Image (cartoon, rainbow, N blue to C red):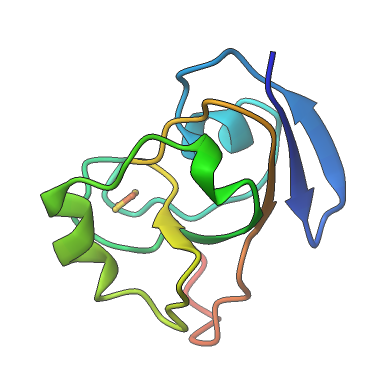
Length: 103
Ligand code: FES
């Protein structure tokens, strides 16, 4: 089963192949914003795939469009709710510079 190391929390989790990064995080108590509830409409679930970028399902058009909205976009960026885990990963959850919008 694939292992994901979440940074900066430095927490390693084992997940079933095919789950989204978002599910992998939330099911393991790792805080990851997902304002739209995982339907590819917000980009708050933006993560940076530090290692294992190829171990994810390919990006679809919806995600390509939506990820443009993400802050601090990198070449290794994905939307966690859309990217399905197919192998080992290191995932960095970017600090949200907007901050202060937690309820
Ligand atoms: S949770 Fe909104 S785009 Fe992923």
